[in-house]
Length: 182
Image 1: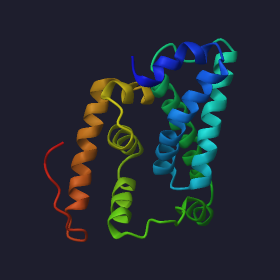
Image 2 (image 1 turned 45 degrees about the vertical axis):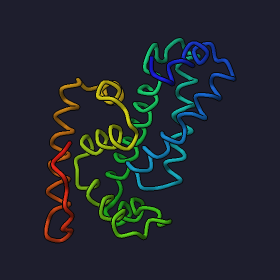
Image 3 (image 1 turned 30 degrees about the vertical axis):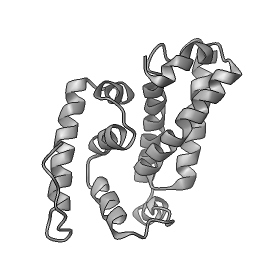
C-alpha cells in the first residue's frame, strides 16, 4: 500500500483528520505537477483546489478511489490541466499567447528556463509521464493509473520523451551534456 493509501479508509468515510492529512501530504506535489503542466501559479492553485473538491464530490456520490489514492488525484489534476489546454486552444492566437505566458518568479536561472522550455517541446502525454515519474516520483504503475494508460504505454512514452529531451538539450543552441542513463 502506498503512503497516501493508508488514509484511504478514512477518506472514504469523509473523516476530517484523514482528509486533512491527505491534503497536507499531496497538495504540494499536486501543485508542482499542475504548475509544471500549466506554467501559471494561479491556475495551478485552482487545479489543486478543484482536484480535492472533485474527490469529495465523488466520494459523496458513492464513487472515488478504491486503491491508489495518489494516482486518482493526479488523474483529476491531469484532466483539469487538459481542460485548461483545450480552453486555451479555443482562444484566438493573441489571447492564447497572453494567457499561456508562464508566471515570472524566481526562475531567472538559465538552466531552469532551458529545462522548462525543453519539457514544453514534448507532446502533452510525454510531458505528463516525465513530470509524474521524475518530478513527482511516481512508479510506472502509478503513472499508468493516473493517466489511464497501460504500463507498457507509459514506458514507451517515457523512452520517447527522454530521447526527445536528450536531442533538445544536447542540440547546438543548448549544448548540455546529457547522460544516456535513463
